[in-house]
Amino acid sequence: MKALVVYCHPRAESFNHAIKDTVIARLTHAGAEIRLLDLYADGFDPRMTAQGLEFIEDKRLNRVGIENHCAAIEWCDTIIFVYPTWWYGLPAVLKGWLDRVLVSGVAFQMPPPEGGDIIPNLTHIKRFGVYTTCGASWWLTRFIGAPGRRTLMRGVRLLCAKRCRTSFAAHYLMDSSTDASRKAHLARVARKVDRLVA
Image 1 (cartoon, rainbow, N blue to C red):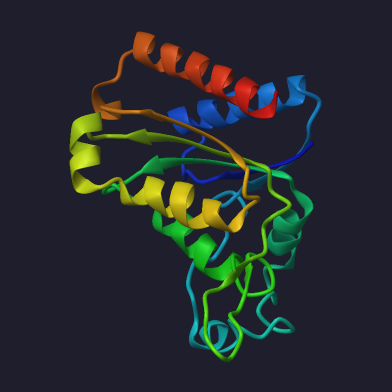
Image 2: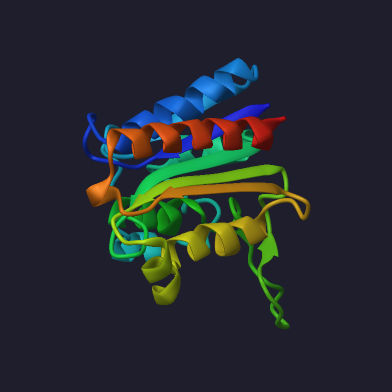
């Protein structure tokens, strides 16, 4: 198993850091080969520049400056995202990572000139996990539509293998969480990862 963990949080002491450590510990226990992309620690630039947009469909040029990120996506058969949900969605750095890294030739192939839809290119990814925290409650997040979860679990997931296994866990009401609720969530994440990679 080749597992890529995409981690996005600016603070080393955050609870998301503990979630990331739990994910890596369970992957290690399962014997996975692991690569970590720590977007903040790596100083990933999420901005889509005018030149980047101009080259977004050019497979010779759309990887310039992000070669290691594209290579990690192509290498893995398991991908796990760990991030905080802010304003019901993805942090800007993670959204920018999707914009810049999941480009033509990496995540998908462009449709034929006569029309049609994009062609999935992540069919080597057979396991897909998302572990997040939310300041809002479960019901309010669902009422808004959980756009961050949808972007990953529906949008990106559709580019993966048809029978790709999925796993999701969120700690809601994070701002009023307790030691007990955080401990319970880490245990839940550990169980979810174990099931995902079994």
